[in-house]
Length: 113
Image (cartoon, rainbow, N blue to C red; front, side):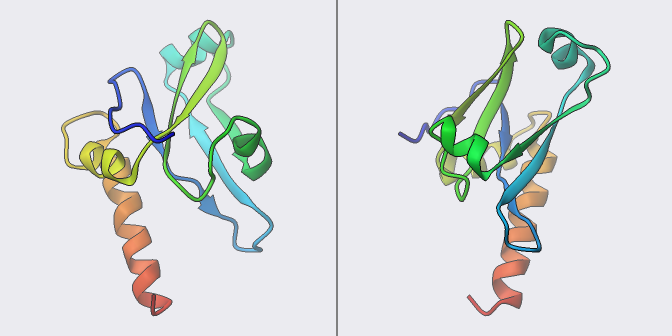
């Protein structure tokens, strides 16, 4: 189920296919507060791949949101519209979301899709 609402405590993400085509892979960058909530201030990123996302019920080809709560990584599928809404907002992750949308558009043009 796709959510159209992304609370400010969630961070948006849209996984990128690896160049070798062996699966989607991203690093979720943690703020210091998120690292503390995860239980280790030295952890600055969490690596996610296609299998991990699918195990959590996330379609890796679509955007999702994540947060750290009680030391656990929580994820939820979000709609493309919700991702675009975040990109047009003044949230902390808006710049990242806008950059992702620009990159995806350039890739589609380059690939003739």
